[in-house]
Length: 296
Image (tube, rainbow, N blue to C red; front, top):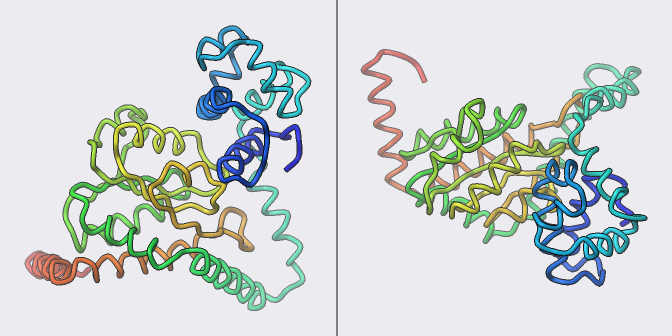
C-alpha cells in the first residue's frame, strides 16, 4: 500500500485493509471513526473547510491535520484533493478497456471468443475457491426465509439484478426491484423496513448511488447480500454476507458472464432450500401461463 494514497479509491481500500488487520498504522479510534465518515461522505469533505469538517466528523481541526499527515499528506488541503477528485466522472473507464481489447486484433474471432470463455471459467473458479459452503448456505437461506426482498443494481449491474429478481419471483413471493432510482435515494430506501433483505449488485467502478443505498439500508436495519467483485469493494463490509465474483475479461466494460452463472446457481440453491414451496410456486406460474396461453 502506497502512502499517501494516490486517489480516493486507494484511500477507501486502505481503510478496508486496515479494518482487516492487513495494514498497521497508529490511528486512534476517534480519528478512525472520523475517517469512516469522510469516506462515506466524499462530497462533504470536498467542499468543507477544515473547521467545517471537524464539526461534521466530531474531532478537532488539529486531529484532522494529524490524520492527514499520518496518511502521508502534507496537510489537509492535499488530503482534501483526493475527495475532490472522487466527484469527477471517470469518463475514460470504458475506452481504456477498449484499448486493451484492440491488442487482440491479430487473433481469429474463434480464438478471441475462446479466450473470453476461459476468462469466465477462471472468474467462476476463483469465486468458488474463495466462497465457503457456509457462505453459500447463508445466502440461499436468506433468499428463502426473508419476508421481503429488494434487489438493486445500477447501470450495467441492473442486468444481473433483473435476472436475480426474475428467478426469485418464480419460486417465492415478495421480491421486487428497488427503485426507480430517478425518484431519489431516500424514496427508494424508504420502501424497505427493518428486517427486510437487500441484494445489491455492483463492481468496480462502484457508483456513489449504489454505495449510498447500501449504507442507508444498513442504517435502517436491513440485512444486505452483496454480489460484488472483491473484498475491497465498499459493499463488502456493509453486507452480512457477500459473494465476490471477478469481472476480468476481454470486453470494453466489466464481464458479467460469471455473475450470470453464479446467480443461476444461487437461485437453484434457494429452490433447494425452499423445497416443495418452490415447486408449488413454479406450478402456479405454469398454470397462469397456460390460462393466459403464453409461453414462459
